[in-house]
Amino acid sequence: MISRRTLLALAVSLGMTAPALAAPELGKPAPPFKAMDDKGHARSLSDFAGKTVVLEWTSSGCPYVGKHYGSGTMQALQKSETADGVVWLTISSSAPQMEGYFTAPTARAWASKQHWSGTALLLDSAGKIGREYGAKNTPHMFVIDKAGKVAYMGGIDDRPYADPESLKGAKPYVALALADLKAGRPVATPVSQPYGCAVRYGSAD
Image (cartoon, rainbow, N blue to C red; front, side, top):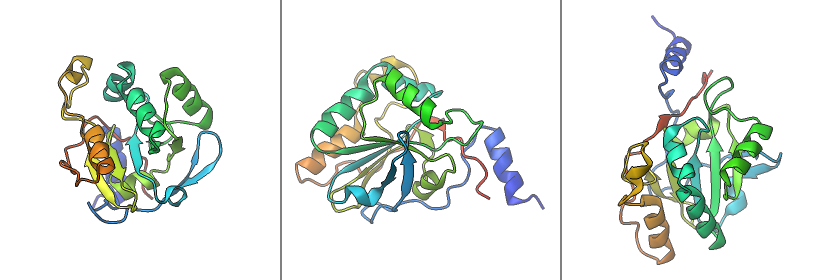
């Protein structure tokens, strides 16, 4: 019988997502977490109680991430939302020696180059947060409402392509979810299909 460790290693070698240990439920409390950011500060979800929180999974080598950062659409959304009081946490769950893996210095360099405008850039190389949220892709997006419940999860929009031209006419699910929450409305599209590169998890053992 093939061991779980061997299966995980095979999945990683094929560029697949390692099995998530859990997944959040829509309308239920978001899984708590704690991680170090690129500046050496410990960050916990509980630090942002009472605020709307966006979680964005990223990878520096992913062309789908590159589409949103290269066009400036991701940074524009980060700037507008954080200016309005939203907490934006960008998370890297790439394991060491995997595509997109960040050390604190390389994370800061990437953030500077991309003009990243979020609240904190979290280093999750062990994949703990990613597995708790069932994060599959970069970017994979989650919105947590002020009550600490999962209000949205899925893709940033409805165009699962790496071509920047696909941004034209795209339905911006995350921006729309945040607008619904601000207006006190139920999120019209609370779940969508995430797309992008597979999160490069290491072994869960």
